[in-house]
Length: 67
Image (cartoon, rainbow, N blue to C red):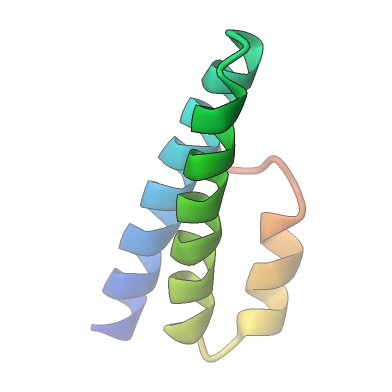
């Protein structure tokens, strides 16, 4: 169950990162900042449900898996 929660949190973070990029590109800075906070919360949720969170933090530092 923890893996499923982590995977869902990662999927949500990936989509939020994509939305944040779109908002930034369209000069919607307030929206981009709001979305970045939501993406950070999704990342923290993924780390909380991953016993190997150090590896997950390294993955989040890259662009891997973004939609």
